[in-house]
Image (cartoon, rainbow, N blue to C red; front, top):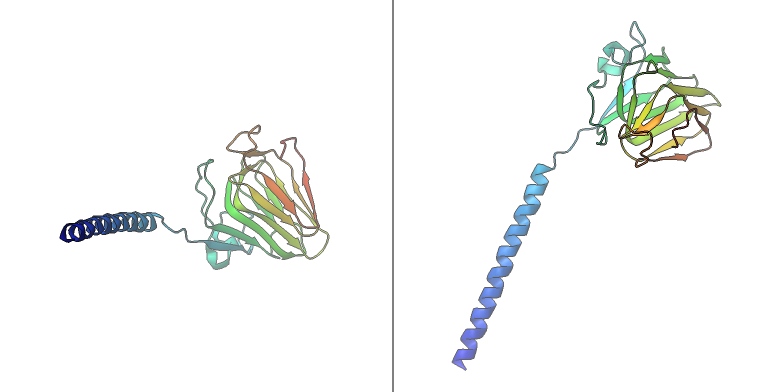
Length: 196
């Protein structure tokens, strides 16, 4: 009887010891994952158009005179933390070289917006997509190419939203990894043969 009690105790100790080591290792990996996963601070930039020009990156055109970042983003990565909000404003014709946004939202507008990226620069849109919600049947547009950095929803709630340039993802017109899902009662017009 003594031997069986010792063997049982020793086996239980070994099992408990292995279980404790596994818990410590898994806990450490979870903590490391938590520490390494840096959260992205999301910032909403609200367009006022109050500046002296129509440039997207003029600080005076944004609430709090805080323009969105103009730096480039890896075409294989989703754009994180840059939300652009357009409401009724003094200016609705907007020029820029390249635009980078997680999401572009047009909220309760009663004027058309015209995004002019000069036809040779690109509008880069992340997983937040586009929300187009005018108060009436009005038309807005992006003139020039659009690059999708992730699959996304374009909610065209009313009116008409037009894209005149090609739509690509990962920089390739023939790569359809990132898709657009159109929702809403409005009309989405894609004036290119990009396939999206």
